[in-house]
Each structure stands twice: as C-alpha cells, then as structure tokens.
Image (tube, rainbow, N blue to C red; front, side, top):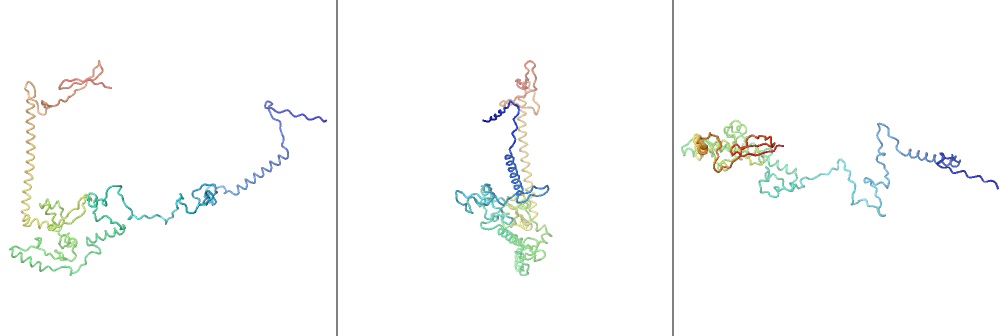
Length: 405
C-alpha cells in the first residue's frame, strides 16, 4: 500500500495570507467564452440603439416618439387597446379617453345669440321689464328680442336709426311736387288779421310764410325733415346756422328761467314741441329736452302768456325784487335770533360774574345753574416723594394723580 499524501493544513486568518490556487485550463476556457459572448451582445445592443447626439444637432423624431410601444408601458396617448379579462376593448369607449387634438380649422364656435346671460343672479329687465330703474340708460326697445341673432339685431337698429332721422335710403327725394304753395292759407290768415285790425306778421311774428317742404327763409327745397316732423317748421341747415337767434335750441332749464315758463306748459307737446337727446351728463338720467327758440319766444311774447318782451322784463324784475326781499327777511330773522341769544348770555354773565358784582368779559364761558361741569386740567406737576404726576382743575380745585411709565 502506497503511502497516501497527507492533506495540507487549512489556512486560517491568523496565518496572514491564503495559499495561491491556480486556475485550471477548463476554467480559463469558460471565462474566455463568457467574455466574448458578453462583448458580442454589447456590440449588438449598441448597434441597434440611436447613435450618440453630436453637439449642435437635433435629436431624431424616432428617438422621442418610438413607433412601437411595448405592451407593458401604460401610455394614455397610445391607441392600442389592451385586452381586459379575456375580452377586447371596443374602439368607441365611453370611459375616459385622451383629448382630441384640434387643428387650426377645427375651433369650436359658440352662438352667443342663443346663450342666456344670467346677470350674475341679479334681477334684469327680462324679469321686470316695467321697472325703469333696471334699464341702466337703455330703453326697452333697445333690448335684443328673443330668436334674433346679433347681426340681425344690429342691422335692425341701424335701419331704425336711419328711419327716425330720415337719413340714407330713408331721406325724402327733393321734388317741387313735395312742397305746397300755401297761398290759400296765407290769404286766409291775412284776411283774419285785417278783420281783427292788426298787422299780419306770420305764425311766429317774423313775417315769414309757412310752406311745408320749402325753407321759410330762402325757399330752398333741402329742408331738415326731422325738424319738420317734430317742430312742424321747414328750414334748411344753412339757414339754421345763419340765424341762430331764431333757430337755436334751448334746454328746459333755460326756457323755464329765461322766459318764465312753467313745467305744465313745457310738457304740453301740442303747445311747445321738443326734441329729445341723450343726457350729456349721465346716460341713465332722463333724456335732455330741447325747444326751438322761435317757438318759445312766440308763445312767451304772445297775449296768452306775457304779452311782449317788455312785460316779460317787468315780470322778471318783480320776481327779482321778491327774491331779494325774501333773502333779506331771512337774514334779518337770523340776525334778530343772534342778538336775542347774545343778550341772554350777557345777562347770565352779569348775574353769575361773582359776589363783588363785577361783570364778566364778552367771550367768557357762562356757567348756568343746570349746566354740567367739565374739568379744565392745568399743567401736570411731578411729585418727587411719590414719583407721580399731579393735575389740578382750575375751576373746582379737584386734584388727580397719574403714574407715567
């Protein structure tokens, strides 16, 4: 029996180092094969990937949006329908879907004429159409009717404005047939004036003929038809600018203060017609009323009112005197009241001046019997012993102490 080789002793950590175990040829061959396989796999993976981006160049579109998306990736933009519980998802799903990508020509258009304005929950003219406080400067006819688009409503408003002003397509044609002669009417007025024994001066006292459709100053056919409809007077625009003392417009305040007309007379449209304009101060105020100076003077100077400009001046002077007397009377009453109160205070001051009977000075405070005493504190004095400030009332002698921090 051959002698068996002895087993080498086990190396321990206390020995300081381990014995070297050399690799066998088989182990070296397997390690080399594994290294080559890993190198080939790495080269194949690098070849399939996008080449590295160079400085100053853009990345390719495929690098950002790959065409093939793995099934395991949860992408909401992906259009792939994954099976659920063994069943395929239908193409039109009622659940949450990605938002549609609208193009330049696919914008949503809203019909604002069909939208309802709730006015923020507040009451509007539709809830109470008869309440003028809710109109906010807009007339009832200016509210858009239901069932009409904005374009139709704007076109209707423009047409109505032109129709009221007789402008544009609604302006009457200039024709000699549209003007009346008026000789019969003028002859009848002249005969009536002769019977009364007065001189015929025309309808408004200026001796001008009133012919509808013809200017009363220059006999022109280009008259202002709006004035003819409202004031029943035919005059052209050139004559209105040429004679401002006759054809200028007066406000309601000027007609009431300058010609001493009353409100019932100004409200009577059959007596004094007026032209309405929007109020220049605030849009929600009442419309401004404008009167023709020729008609206002004709009525104010007529026998039905004052009888002439001299009588109007006399009435104006009388009212000025009455107003001045009223102001003077009011001033005298206030002056008498001031004197009475001054005498009462002087009597109290002389009576309550003191025991010696010396009267007080004017302006001094007068203390009555039932008056409430108000302390008048003097200058504060510091007490060195207590360290507190002391004040004394100059009238009653009351003292108080204050602690200053």
